[in-house]
Length: 376
Ligand SMILES: [Zn+2]
Image (cartoon, rainbow, N blue to C red; front, top):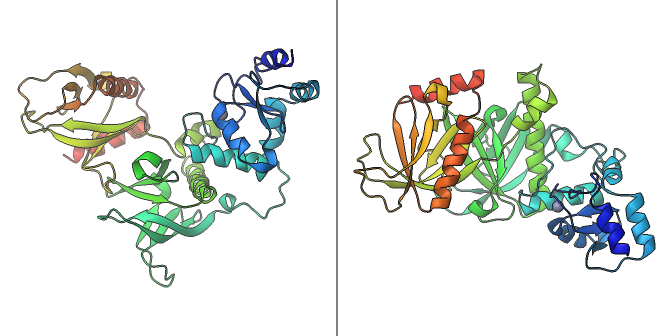
């Protein structure tokens, strides 16, 4: 009987998505907080001792008092309390995001109560416009990670890092945050808290790979960089609304993976390369390996009416390709032939590229296109 009421409650529009990651049809509930959550998020709740009471709405026994508590609370009420003061730039994770982002979001909301608008903490690190600390950074040509001091300055719009921990030495690199992107890459970096920092230098894209042992610390870095990027975007686009600017703070890449690539004549031997499709900048990058600091090349992806298209294909007269599932990207300058290992990847690449091609070009895209085509 009690479960039947819960199953009705969870169908209400306020409750039919996980309170923490937005996954549809949650089957668990926190009877401490009165929220409905998905299986994954319920696991995070269970591990936080101050909020730990979670139950399955289908399988567990509920007494009437607890059901009454759930019905008088629910996701919307909890959101009004625990998400009352989430900064505009703060990243709210989705179901598909990595574990550390979801875990820290749940801890920040309910355990540290960072967004209730009445926090007793001093100004939070990601809101002060300045942040410094040590991160483990992958060496440029080495596989090892080395401890490096990083300094983020919102005032200067820069992220710097130092080769030695001696602060009197000049920074090894001072990176403008104007073109900076940060995205969690736990699988590729081989660490649950692995973060990829990308930026433009001399019109080339460079990557840094970092992590921190503490999940809280790496998510602070992520949101501190987002805060600085948001401040920069507000300066660069003073008339831009939050709705327009927030998606541009940081982004996940639309698709990544290995493909084989041939040269402009399409008779050159195929080489395996790591590709990243950045939908926002309309760029298809390729790297020698998936952990390279610098791109080998980039293909601009325009629209159909500007001469860009993608098709599945089996190219004739090619050699050296071990993989058989091909796709052809037509651009005004040349045709690119890529080979995928499996059909599913071939379909995913074609689908992802079509998604970019079908998106209208913005004024800044024409500048990007001219720059990339000018590089050849
Ligand atoms: Zn969830």
